[in-house]
Length: 118
Length: 399
Figure 1: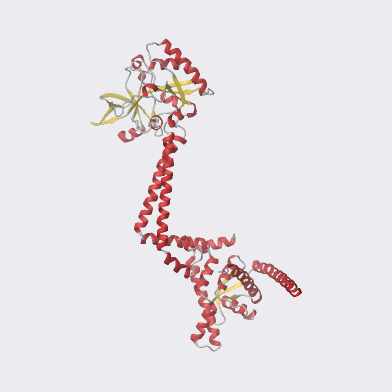
Figure 2: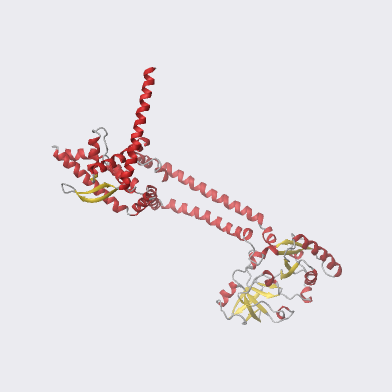
């Protein structure tokens, strides 16, 4: 059932959530989901429900905190904000992803050159 | 660690968190519908689109739960509830399963407790490792061949240098030969005649009172008895003032000198399966000597004396005594450690029994797994539905 793919998605989703909260400040689940969809240029089609699994995971690791509050249009919603530990984690994750994507890009380019030569 | 604690806590406030999650998801849909409405959709379409974007809400909840709590604990609780439901539904199967397991376990525990008592546990006496069983000549033959006459025994006890003490009991005690009459009610009991030093040598102390006096161990001395703990409880209601009282034994007044402790069980060591109710003095005198080979002998080795040396000395003394007392039966003491003597004859039988019970337990397991297999074929359809509904790979297996 493509477990490995799901894992990768989870990992990425956590970083996206942390990043969103770091940039926008306290947000509710829907806000985070929409924001990620918009920023990604609607390129990833997020099952919005999965965001809640990510939120609870982050919360349990102490990287975000949650509080019930009222939204702009007066709906009761749970607002999440990033904690200090979360910010630190985010910095680590960002460094990791940047490194990984750089390496991936480099490796793929080499592969292509080899193919072109052949 | 923190995560684990959080998850652990979450497991116990499941319903609270579950409501929280429901509310949160409702809010989410609310936002989504609002936005879709604002974009000009019909209310129905707005709701439909919102739900599509959200994805399967049950799947999302399940994912949430997995991340929130200790999923294995939740699954365990689920499986337990499920097992209880199935047990109620299929009562016959349940009863049968419980019955076989109970039988199997019952049989094995019984046998292993016997094994433990006889083979593993040390004898319930002081320094049991120095206690020796002194058979006369051939230990494999009848009781008469194992026992001695009184006078040769006294001579052996007198002359040897290997034993710190030797004591004897009357091996031909009659089963249910003593009649106790108490408040007009008679009861047949097992009474064991023992020599004066028998209990002190074993290192057993009476729980109440004291052992026999030298007077009581004389021929026709004052009649005395020690009660077993069981008899004391059963017939005398654990009377703490029993010592010194006279009871009627075989129509004669006998003074109770004391009560043996609960832990002392003559039968478990010397005569498996026998229950001793009373102990009476056995006089080591010319009168009892005339009875022939009657006494079974136990000795305590002096510290540091090996069994072999004691055997050599006893054999030598045996020959000497036999020569000096030509009118008596000859004695050829044959020594063995008391522990070996006790478990020796039983060991192979008990081993076989232990293995048999092990096999029974295996059969029980095999039977049960057969039953379960038969059931699992009956449940194939159910399991197919479960996996179609999205049960994880490992989950149906636990049922």
